Length: 391
Image (tube, rainbow, N blue to C red):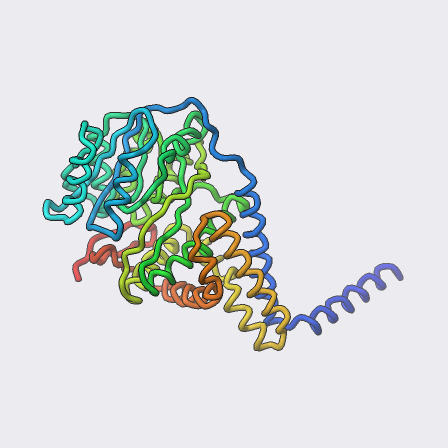
C-alpha cells in the first residue's frame, strides 16, 4: 500500500512540475517539433538508401505526357525526354486543342529528333478529369507494355528511365514514383516552391514511417499496362480529381507496392500572381481533404510556426524558439539534402512565414467543394469525384 501511495504521489508531483514548466499552449509546439525530428530521421533514411539498382532490366517503355498550354521552360522539359539514355522508348504527347501553343514546341522537337520515337496524339477526352481522358487515349496508342506517366512540364536527367524503370524488375512492385523540385520565376511562385520543398516533400518522406504507402505522384508514375488493365484502365480513375493517388491506391490494392525512386525531377511553376498560387494551393488542399481525410486533419499538428507563436504567447519562449529552429533545419534537410533545391538554402528564413500561409490555405480548405483547374472550375464530391462546372 505504501509503495502504491508513493508512486501516485511522485506521479502527481511530476505532472505538477511539468505543467509549471510547460504551459498547456506550448504542448502543440512540442508535438510539431517531434514531427520535424521525424522528418529529419526520414531524410537521413532516404539519403542512406542506395540509388535504384542498375539491373539489366530495360523493357521498352511508352511515356505518356498529357499536355495543355505552354508552361515556362516547356521546350527544355520535353527536350529532356528526347535525349534519354535508354535502349527503346517512345514519347506520346496528348493534346486536346488543335490551337494549343504547346504544339509548336512539340513539332519543333519532332523536327529536331526525327525517327518516329516522338508522336502527337490529338485526344478527345470524355471523362470529368480531362487529363485522365487524355491518358486513356494515349494508352490506346502506346506500343509497349511498360508505361510511364509524367506531367507535361517535367524535366529529367538522361538516366531517368534506367533508374525509374529498374525497380519494376521486381513483380511485387506495382508503381514507381518520384519526388520533384519546383523552379520559381517570381515571388509568388517562390512561396509555392518553398512549400513544395519543405512541407509537401516532408510529408511524403514521413508517410512510409507511418505505414502510408499507397499514393503516387503525378511527377512520375511508372507501371505495367497489365496492372492498369486489371484495375479497369484509366477509366477507373477518370471521375477523380486526385487521379495519381487513385492510381497508386488501386494498384496497391492488387497486392503490389508503390516505391519512391531515388530520382528527383524538376518542374517549373507557372503562376504569375498571389491569386494564382492561392488557387493552386487551395486545389491541392481540398483534393487531399477528400482523398485522405485523416491525413488532412492530422496536418494541423505539423504546424510548427503556428504553435510556436502560441507557445510564445504563453511565455514558453524556449519552446517556441526550438520549434522554429527544428522546423527550419528539417526544411533545409529535405529541401537541399534530398531535393538539391538551392532556392531553399537562399531563402530558408522564409520557411516559418510560408508555413503561416500554408496554415491559412489549410483552414480555407476545410470548407468548400470547388477547385480551379487551369481555368476550369470543378466541383468535388465527398468521395473525391468531380463534375465540371462553368464559371
